[in-house]
Amino acid sequence: MARYCNRPNAMLAAPIVTLPTAIARHLCADLLGRWHPYWHRLAHRVTEQLFPGSARHTVTLAPRDLQDLLVVLLDVCLDFYDGTLSPQACGFTEADIQETIDLHQHHYGPLLDY
Image 1: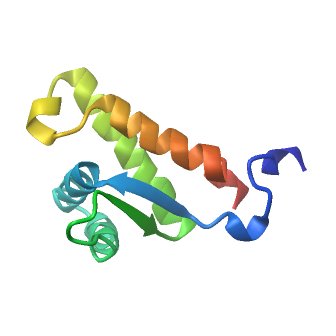
Image 2: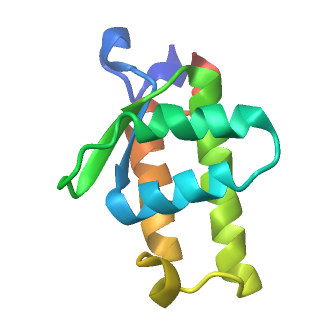
């Protein structure tokens, strides 16, 4: 039972992540720039859940898709380390990405629980 300590109710453990607009746009562009069609489908699943004018977007995905999305977010963090991405160019910082991932894991725990 200890692995569910962040979840008072299993029904609340929906596979969702909340993304700021700048991160969501960059993430979709990154996914569409990858060669495999799976990434393009994932980008379209995310894009169809973005609402114009909203500062943050709550995206609901299948657990495996969400796991892949979080891995791509970590790849974006590596782009900051490499110097290929800067906050001025994309409109967010590495700390913003870490906050997004941490917030998801705080509320829903690791995805391996699904």
